[in-house]
Length: 306
Image (tube, rainbow, N blue to C red; front, side, top):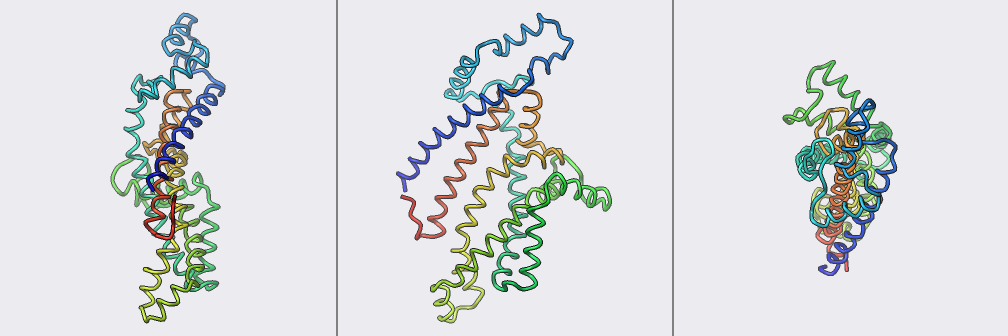
């Protein structure tokens, strides 16, 4: 197990190096100049030249890259072009909001997916199973940029039950969590159903029933625990997706998380902030994948990672 963790951590270094290099090159290839955005089209040449030198954008691309990589090795992600604050501070300031939205979306997804998946597996091809299939298709098909405004119109404008935007109490979290967690719930419910159907035919489940154990205990303790292994994979992968893919949801609900921070940085050509956000998200994504693999061995001792 220890050797496996060491190998994965070493691989993490190469993955993040590739992410940083790719993002650095792509962001500098995007049309647009941050100096133009900051000073406007009517700025005089002297002001443009001075700001370009202050930002280090007058240096060749390879020198900018070397300087940025040297800063990362020192734990410095750079200074935001617009706010003049350390990129790390801005990311850590927004990160709790993204984590809050991520957990809210996962709770919504599990509350919806677990009952639907279990009932569908216990009574396959029945009314509930067919209905859950339809709900799953709708959940996967409906995009966030349509579902979010629809929920706002219904629950905020028409019924006046929930607030529309910004971060606050639990009531502010409900609509963004439903918007972000619906597609994940649809995917998880079908995964739980398929995995549980396969496990229910295993010999150890039949033996548990033959011993006279209550059906509830057979399903929850013996069958469901083993059926959750592929589900854990999806949940682990979705952590990174929810952190990075919540840009549209955060923009709709004015949620002050990493997604909206990254979007604003892209619009303003804030190179250090864009690179810092993506590096931060990529690091979390890889670490969560490692944690997911380690969870396999805890859930199912038959899994060996070495």
